[in-house]
Image (cartoon, rainbow over all chains, first blue to last red; front, side, top):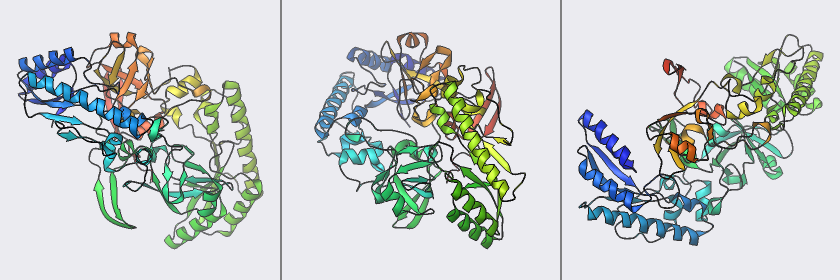
Length: 265
Length: 265
């Protein structure tokens, strides 16, 4: 197992704690590439970190990684490619600096799903891709890609009420789908999850209810019917369930435990 | 155990299924009171449902319930009281109709947290209050009540990075806090969760990161510090954890399993 670090203070703390435990920490350095989240920003700070690695006895430098998550908000594929190129170039530049410090054959890890589903050329020197949403896809990524053909995960829900001619209620709410909106760029969705077979979006979510305001949909389903929902963002949705069910057509082939669920803290 | 029903079709289905199982279903009828979610809207439909109860052999009518969740969006305490009064009056009216059908001593259940924390007078005839958020409170409810003194649940998080003079990053993201916004009425919060001890709001959430853009806060914490966050909405947050820790001061008194977690479907 390895994990990330982005400053000298934490590196020294890790070195001390792993030293006390008689263990070596395998570390990758995070490079900030425009998402404005964590990661080293200044080259000078990165050089200081590389020097500190040399001084620490209980850490191993395993590489650099970055996340161009701002690609989610790109207005189109062209802007997404621009974000990807700038982010990757910057990551490779920091990898070159690490080489100046004598490191070789380390990991150079990049990736966000929007920038990797669109088949942009991956520059030489990148050794690892981490497009997390890619494995299942979701309604937002499908919007960015332009097709729902790659969506592999859905939440099965029951129609529980049709109190008016236009209002339908499902038993999947925020506790089953999360209440994540996508409101910027080419990942934008107009609702809180897509019912693909009926081509309707969920209008609002309560904890245990989804509301769809659509007369055609209300007429085409009955209480008790099952519908499949593509969540806006699949990552926090997987984190809600103890098991995933692998299906082929309508047949359940396997029940897979979600081992990492809830292992946030 | 009892559960809700809001139309004749479902009632007959429940009657049939419980009959096959040789069991009696204990049912309460949901009354729609302005939230525009589930529940019986028309008195005629309620009367039809009451008649259907009389014909069914495997169901027991246990009462009526309503949820005035639109009180969350009230612009102030005065509008909240108005919503509460209208909703409660309507619930009691449907209870009276149930009495016309010969039912006595049944449950009349009301409640949403904003309308019950403000000590409005509860009319005679109401037998049960269901203010779910009330048990823990959250940042939105505290806004509606005007004080954080009643907040009992928080998420403990670690400062993991301070990459710029203004930007601080915590290890609690959407998978630890949910990404729920409150953007209407007196429950509105300006951010994605409150760090009460420092009086700062979280500006944005990624799956595993919270970002706070505040120079004073960035200066007052160090990487490794623990901070307590009041989530915007506590209900779906409790649903993320296997255990809750009861604390007195800084001492953990008890570890309580969250037995209903993930029991949505």
